[in-house]
Image (tube, rainbow, N blue to C red; front, side, top):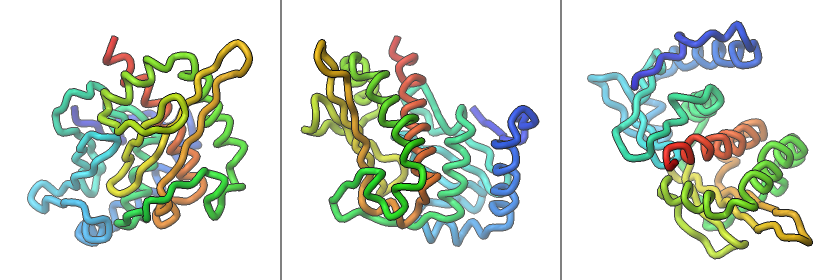
Length: 221
């Protein structure tokens, strides 16, 4: 499904409309060949579109109008065609990101250079939300992550690694709740994230991923 952001009615939420208009102006002016070179992603000059992997699906994003389509797969849910904040995150990545690989180390949000900036928001909207949504629904969490093609990890009671953009991995870890203790969770980021992302990107990123889990689960029901 092709999706043009201009079709959205942003008058309902200026917090979304105003940033998007700003990023679109920068995107239209940017050189697509330089973006492709900087991020090491394909750019088809004939079709004028990038190929950008995002949470296990390949998307085509046109330049300069940011029309989004996906390569057919069995995921059934496509955040870049559904979620405004996923698109804002992605256009910021195209404008500011760098091709990078981590050293193999992973860090909490707090351990990032700017980790204190949105720590309270990240804890509430991401860490606690993940724990209380899936901490007592481990089976659903496993089904979703396997459907996404995530890699299982030996952390907590259940954990998976997802790749949000090429070279940028995230660990999502859950500890199941019981009669004595509530469920808990942790989200870790590969140590190269500061190369391409700022504090606000990381807070939005966790929110986007956890919000996407609900969409993927619906495809399994």
